[in-house]
Image (tube, rainbow over all chains, first blue to last red; front, side, top):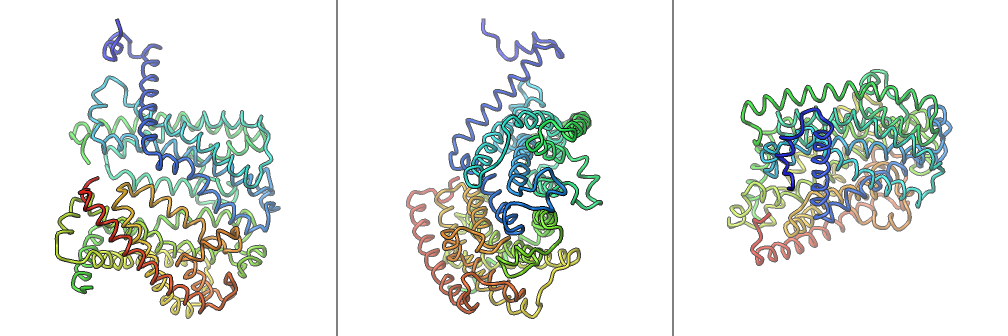
Length: 292
Length: 275
């Protein structure tokens, strides 16, 4: 007999491997659902995957206008390359991937609220975290597609000197950085549940993280007053590690960055779960789950 | 054209805006947050706030002032395409479009009223942004030129809102405004001289860029407040101003014509209030 979702939950004990697999399956199905929705709007889909490239081109042109070519001796003092296009492409590409992961995760709950499906989803036996993970996976897969278009576009227009083997340290960083971003998404999701006016808050956070993240400049030029905030931001080390991986491979600095990310993973994930549970509990208690 | 209608629309929109005071602060702060990484980028690439290579293209070494003027004034572009372009859509979403449409007033008057109220909003944003930025950064402007450039900005804004009316016509048919507006905004950011001069762009992009009121207006404003900057092509600023006036007339004519056709099409389809 085919098992229903309810019977699966009934059979699987809370912390068993089969229960974890069930939750992963829920997240996967949600991701598929979001992909189907997104593909139903071809213009929006096309814009979302091509936007990182369109966004990057003015940054590159501005960089080239500043240095009068593609090499900067000043940049070489701060980073592992003097090539401004290489530096900007992978800074921007990593930023686009990481931002989209937490943006999608954070906005997922609000999107369900808008479409009137949040309460129905909450009634299913899937964990709330699986809902956010499903959104995060959707953000991740779409970002990876956009990444290839962005890097491919720059490669076609300007040419990039990269070692394909260095994609391994890059993917490793991406994997670990996603965990802390998931935690960060949980915090934003919790706040969004409580505050409702989500997009303005997420947009502000996005702008602030953009300001701190070393996507278009090396971390060294960030003013001292902002550095402590940059150091605890889940995006900063993701961007730094991603670019270091592409430029230098498994270097000492890369391992140092990985260490920071692993520590941040624990902090952000635990914090995320606590904050989300707190806000979710209070929103449900107030009966404001489906409210706008 | 009825002044009382335009006045009523402006009054309605200003009342609405004044109810969301935080929004004014929010939209004044956000562009500053977006431009700051570009300032850090400049410092990381050239080691300061001046660049000889930048001067070869623009005539000015001071990329910081160049960038700030472009980014802050781009607020008028955003306001034209988000505000005026989406005004009809906001009415649709709040369920007031059909009520507004059955009143015996001209649609064009509604759009002119919306454009003026959006200009008030954008001007407040721009003033706040300039004030905040000049508190933290050393921006070098010729303030007398800034006063003259108000007239140029008025001409620029008129053209931009003509484009906004055109966008409103497209949005009333296609309904889904977000993606279209974002595409247009990102595209305009790329092809207009916000961060760099036109010389930095490929030839065919420059030609397109010169048909956009913001390109002409921004170039003249920069010339007025940063006299060392060079215009592209190296015409006298008055040629750009004449071009701007021609574009204003053309964009409003095309905008109103297209909007009227699109509106009639939507009404015939019976989908005016539909989502």
